[in-house]
Length: 127
Image 1 (cartoon, rainbow, N blue to C red):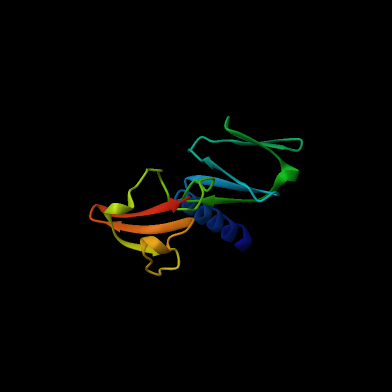
Image 2: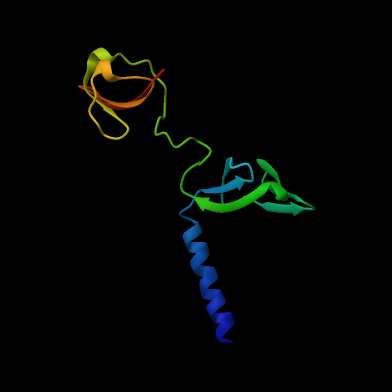
């Protein structure tokens, strides 16, 4: 009886916490990720060796290595770059590399830099 009560409490706790995570993320065996929005009516269906999530995604079970709830769509690269714009370095007040070291325009090579201008701070990729 105690085990059933404990199990019921745990299930209620897990369900309450899953509400805070709007995405279900799948990690494939090749390391790539796929995130699916988990609306309240999304259904997971198993048929043979295939997992279907709503009408959005289909996975072969042998290609899945991990599945977890997440707060963001993890298929987007973790660069922090939400849009790409052509920026002029003429407006730069300060320039930093990704290690936090201040650099001059002359020191910049290919890579990603943090540029501070009078309009704000942004991350830019130098090609």
